[in-house]
Image (spheres, rainbow, N blue to C red):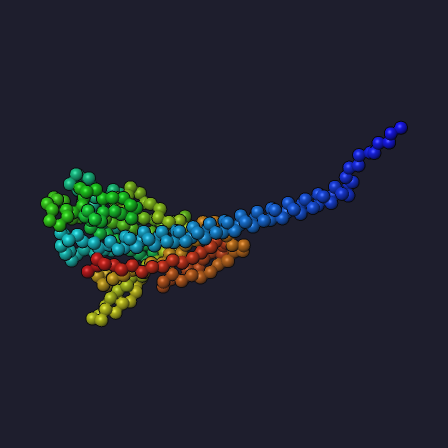
Length: 282
């Protein structure tokens, strides 16, 4: 009679040991994945803070550089100011094709002109247009029928007000968005996300030696030195779009002359600043 060996399987203890080892390996893999995912999310959010901060400064800087621009063939206008301090200063006129130069005048409300607030300033400026400068803050073009004719060309039968481009920057505080209202925009447009606060200071030159000092909009209104503004400082506090910190914390950030206390949260914050020369205020 031939003896056959019985097939021997795993004992219960061996099976339990194998399961424990497997669980440890699985926990290690899961931990590594979660850590990698967390690091990737944090990197992406910090990158978004950088992108939104730079975008906000770039768009605002481009508009400020054109503020107060007068085409060469228009001549001097002693009553023209690059700053909009009252919605009534926003003037719409007919272009040569019969259309209005401003698409939606109601966008320029009282809280969207030059104003000073600890929760977020607003800035509104205006410039004339020709075939070189004809775009508002939202990237919308003023039609050629509204632009002043180039120097030496046959003049168009339009009111100078028809060639004005108005731009306003302000915050949507509840959604943390930097908004733009342009005279060629049908509605307000989003410029950048995650904007917690924005502050402006106005560089004023006084005296024969050209001494410069920076004032906020409130102090500038009291002094009445709008014609002496030669530069504008801009500071934005940008927040990540998603929480990235392990534990909530609050910090104090100084935006120019304004201290800003952030909420006790897990978001990442950063401050971006620039100074823009106002070339056309004279």
